[in-house]
Length: 174
Image 1 (cartoon, one colour):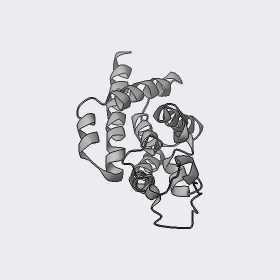
Image 2: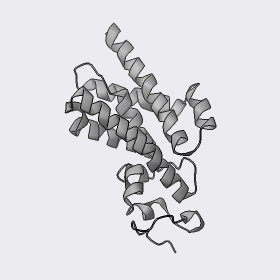
Image 3: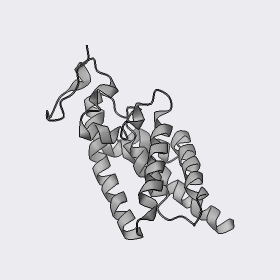
């Protein structure tokens, strides 16, 4: 029988426990790395996590100054490496599908500088999901070669950079 993780307890190795990802949501580190719970979606957790990241973008991030946005993005990336690493170890899986903080950071990187218009973040969402799912080279190579929290984050960050470049090119031609 699975038991809930006590957030105050550190260093629990749950890989030998019969535990489901939902059982660790009470721990604040895992709550964040599971995308505020969005990664627990039984279908398409990466897409659901990216939707949550887009909602946060619309509600909070898009109105920040560029400097503050970049600060939030940098903290999200740096802290995200640690968050994803901790949760991956807790779940006993390198890049468990429920870990979606990497989608948050990747999408937010993709949307760092956008033209005016409500549809640009939606277009960014679509392009980001294509890059994240298809994993063209060198994203696929990094996904296989880099491990730990950085490995979880790096492919989505590169997908975010590719999306940012695609959005900027589209803005130039449209």
